[in-house]
Image 1 (cartoon, rainbow, N blue to C red):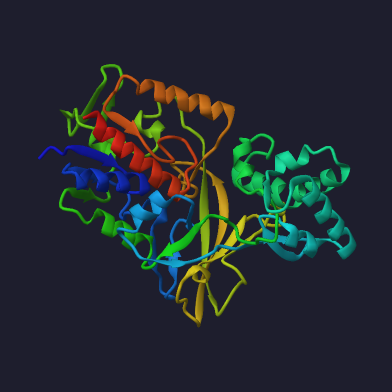
Image 2 (cartoon, rainbow, N blue to C red):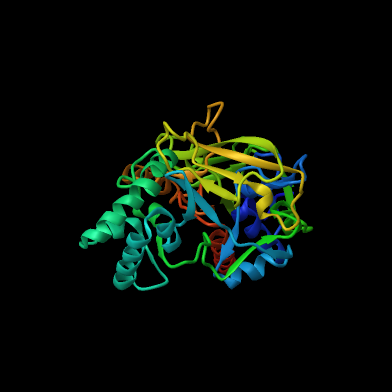
Amino acid sequence: MTPDVIVVGAGYAGCVTARILADVGRKVLILERRNHIGGNAFDYLDENGVMRHEYGPHIFHTNSKKAVDFLSQFTDWYPYEHRVLGSIEEKLVPIPFNLKSIELLFSNEKADHLKEVLISVYGMNTKVPILELRKNDDPQIQELAEYIFEHVFKYYTMKQWGYSAEEIDPAVTARVPVLVSYDDRYFQDQYQMMPLEGFTRMFENMLDHENITVQLGTEAMDHLRIDPENGAVYFNDNLFENPVIYTGLVDQLLNYVNGDLPYRSLEFDVQTKDGQFQPVTTVNYPGPAEEYPYTRITEYKNMQKEPPVDKTTIAVEYPYIYDRNGEKGNVPYYPVFTDDSKQKYSAYVKLLENVPNVYLLGRLAEYKYYNMDAIVDAAIEFSHQLLEKE
């Protein structure tokens, strides 16, 4: 039977869209190259009884009631507020950098003065991007800004992205602002919680629908062929005129005709330890690569509702240049936002303008950084717009 819709990818973008379309009677076929659903949010209980996140820690946080209401159809939740510490001058201090961080790193007299200056200029309970803080004319704020930049952003950004903070899109460093407050949570959103039985179970419930068929371990491009010149899509060599919602790599979709788009990848050194390894879920190591070749260590059980006592699982995280043919770094995580990469992506999108039934959705396909809540919102909006077009 020919499906009403083909969805490529079983991550957030694909699963949310598939469920909404299935609920209104569309027969949806999901093609997923991996052997599991959930995309990079895939998790499972490991041999230590720890809910391990295979592709790095995923923490749900949002101000969007729409996203919460949609996902709550498929999971119960438990509250979790994420906290991150950074290893700076042999001390563990809160990240994002805040007033408590200042107190831990400077003498009492200097810390009190710096806090007073920050509050007088920016106000209490405000967020200031590091690049904005560095532009301030006040010499005291400039001194503090350079200290924070050097110890929090400079080397971490170079390790994570392969570019300096000045070369990368300002939105990247703006994601972790300096907080003029004592709030030591990593996020300040209204809703901060985790799915009670894990993300994978939430996705299983989402896809449990008679109108949804999921084919795992299936390379979509073995079945789909895009002909931009003639504006046609072929599925198993037959012309396919129904919607194709593509959530994967857009350069792969078009057989890399304009070259590879750059992405950053990650590799994890997963280790079992006894007891408790670190005081919070994540500790960042923002020093130079010569000192710390990794960027952070995550202890997964610290985000569990009922963590095991005896054993713990940690993941030491190493950034890599994405290489689709490499032994390591072969999973694309983050688009690299430079002027060149944006132009190359735009050229790929232009090639698809003549193919009206192919839709790009999600972090990889749109070459855009989405948090989990944001892609849920985007998929909901996209699905409704698609149905309105019919």
